[in-house]
Length: 395
Image (cartoon, rainbow, N blue to C red):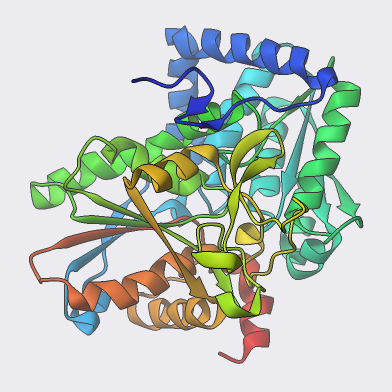
């Protein structure tokens, strides 16, 4: 039985203030037209090839594989995309859509800063005004990306309310959009929020999975046994998983931020079991899993990686979790930092701390697998932005 548009099983939907219902309906119609237009699809494909640098490589991690002594490890190299992360796939698509809709300004929220940089980049090359909302805490730990956004011509607005992180940046961006929708498009950065954002962002990020599928078939002659990707809002992971959802023999694992440990309550693991985990509810326009107390108030989160420091998750992930098609685990800050250092020394790659969570789970899982098995880890971004955090960890 198929879900209704905008629904993933019982999750998703469009829970938005009345002032945004019209703009969301307009966006749904515009995106349907964009998706159905061969010329629009060709233009996006050309930008991804000639500007973003796609396809990104699927690299065999030979030394890491030998060190772990188990399955073969491949890395899907989104760190090689322009701006250094997968976020540019979505921002180029949405910026082209904004221009098609006649919008002259785009806004975005950002946590780790990569989405903000990607939105500012897409706006600059298409001649659009850009404003990025960013929590004050995240601005401090991602100062380099703040500077990059400003160099690209974006206005970066600090958000001092609430926990001063990604959740609060989303709140401010939605307020701006409600007040300026006639001229402004909101480039939401992950596969969450009200319909059509989860579907639209998933579609723009699905290029990751399509490429990885072709590349692993070319390299190994068969599909992988396991896919691993980090999950904040969930765009890089759903982009990778999307091309393999019907392949029941391919295991899908999303890795959340375990922070300082699940028992401490200082984490962002929405699918964690028991009282420390999340439960179904509504946040930022979608019915999904989120961290909330018994009164329904959103709990504060923690992660060493700003991009995973978010209390909810994309609704398609909630459906994949409840259906059992994907499994979701968490790793701690300490484990992610250790994985960062190991990949740097073994493969000469500095992964984003978000991606380091996926790597940390691979370090646990791969040695227990047979040597003829194949694992793909999505390296969703590079770690330049995280140097101050890593240096401060004394890892």
